[in-house]
Image (tube, rainbow, N blue to C red; front, side, top):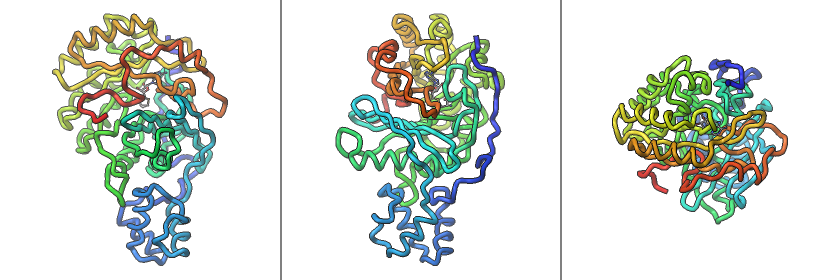
Length: 406
Ligand code: SAH
């Protein structure tokens, strides 16, 4: 049944084969920033000014840094705010409120990010790696293999650019702020652990150290790397953890999510429960519903039993109608089958919200990010074949959590 060879590659060098991205402010600690500024012959307080522009005003444009002397601006920006992302192509959907951007990095590695604006929030889905080494059978990114880990600044530049575009009124609906970030783009965030944690810390620190987002509006989604999940719980940062489960039994999960051969379903759910115990944040269980593969009623019951066996009120479920991936025979479950799956989870007392398929017609939905430059393969017709679930309110990564401000 598995359509891709099982090949696990967790060992990207942190900076890629062709060297490091240029030095960037967002990669440096406050002390390192001050030191870097002094090395350029500038007073240390310029580091704070630069941080205010970058994290507070979302700009790396020297023309906007009018509180800095002209010569200093150019020197500081050239040395500490080099461009790391080049927009190669932008696709929009939903009247312009869903925007997928293909970025080229300094070494021509490619990544994608997807911005989704909703009435009361705006969510950016960021990439944490170029490609992915986890080889999940139904995921477009998984077919690429891992090219390299991104740097902290490469992750944060995706965020700054989205925040800037929203603040500048470039997304229909008037100027607004970026409120949510989900690590659900290309890559496995916990396989690039220290870089992702550094990025999360910068996301939540207030300017001039970071973007000042709320930790509870940040979601880290993992395929289930158990030791890293436990490490994340110990960090004491109350981000939301999402676990990509996709099957409640080891036999099937090992086919769909090959990393399951290392950490079993039981170990993975135990780690998710521990995350709740240590952070108080309800964990989200992601489950792509694949027709006749993992959508049987008995699997819904088994999932419900596994989750409730570890207590109540600690978890919610986020079934995702499978988004089509080129070259795969798999499709989303029938709507009635999906409804039955959801009803059974709810009957077990698991709050359950079907995620919408926003972005699917621009290959921008979950599991469709493959960073190719060909035009999107699907049009409205294909989207119609994957009906939006009744009552779906959540976007990519915005698992409905009733505590959440939306
Ligand atoms: N590597 C991380 C984050 C990226 S994927 C993870 O696995 O969690 C974000 C979510 O999209 C995951 O739950 C992933 O399993 C899911 N996904 C992947 N391919 C999909 C597809 N074709 N249709 C629907 N969801 C998919």
